[in-house]
Length: 152
Image (tube, rainbow, N blue to C red; front, top):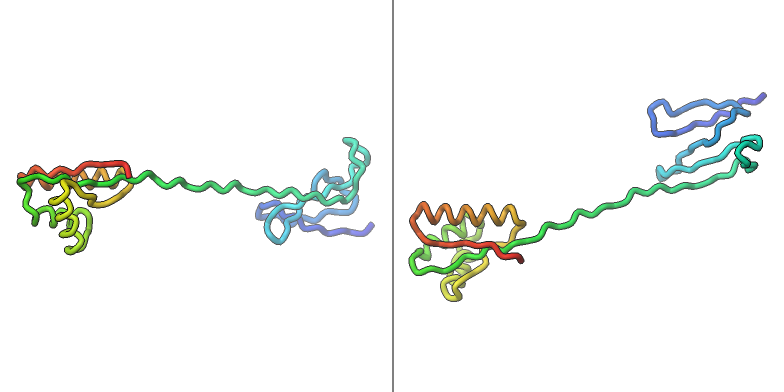
């Protein structure tokens, strides 16, 4: 009896196995070049009503790709008041929101002229932290500066 050597790759470290001709195996798994399984049925001598021999059946198992949903964004809005100095607002924008001096001055003037201005747009947790930081710094300096969240 000739020995037929087949290498089986089942995804385990000891996957190289030797099978002798005539060994009954209901399903033999081989791996294609792109790591997707191919299944070959062996003869089952009429058991289970399957009389096909050596038929290759491909079964592509694809993982479902899940996309992470982007978090909703919120605007940090500075509100104008008559008591907070413009220099303090510029410093808040530079320190808390990491704006350059020119950008901070532009935002501060927009707040001063229009009554409110967007300091930045962030995910909820980050925006909430920045609003809290602005209000704590204003309270420490004894200014009534307010910063609120708005859904972007």
